[in-house]
Amino acid sequence: MGTLEKHLRARRDSGRKLLMPYVTGGITDDWLDVIRAYDDAGADGVEVGIPFSDPVMDGPTIQAANDQALRGGATPIGILSELQGLDVSIPLIVMTYANVPFRMGYERFVDECTRAGVHGAIIPDVPLEEMDAWEDAVGDADLDTVMLASPISSDERLARLSARSKGFVYGVNVLGVTGERSDVGVWTADLAGRLKQVTDLPVVMGFGISTPETAAAAAAPSDGVIVASAIMRLLLDGGSALEAGAFVADLRRAIDGA
Image (cartoon, one colour):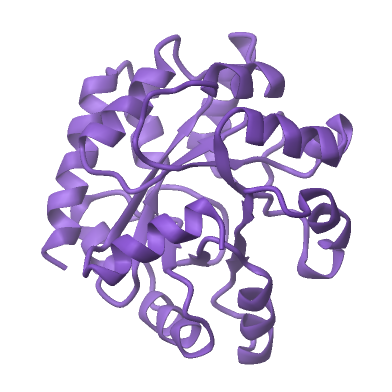
């Protein structure tokens, strides 16, 4: 069991709902301060997006965040190098698309992640059936591969996905791309319940969570939530690291009452 999974299991098993905000690496000059603010606000982990020019799973807000970071000169190696020695108490999970580690070489990408102190990886466009090469590269490195579960997947496929996932299972609240929504969708409770029938891993829901109210609604039937677009919109609109942290603190209070 890796560092990420141990950390999340311990917090979940204590009765705590998990909160993992996202930040696009390089979106602002002080993006590392955003992570520190998340830590101070009570986050349980941080999803760090490595910018990519064609983020096919992401909606317009995360696309804009990627574009801003890339215009500012962000690179995969640069992002991972900046994470080295980051003084936070919670685990880091990188999220990127297969082109990035493939071009770098899976083995080198895994090595750079572990050197940076990253303990989890989400690569959403590598399907279950094509994970072997990536898993071989990870080997016994302390880097948990998190799998995404769709609300329209069969129970049999959810079981297979969960068996291959490490750290936690990422439940997708809605069909479509990431983005802010006023409702987390009719599938949230159903998918969280179905996943809990097939795995003891923490089940964390993402996509479409944009307010404390939607965070609480998604956290109630699951083990926690991931929030991305709403915070990136705040930063794109000129919000500060402290303001991003204050929003995460509002999410923390909401899900603690879920």
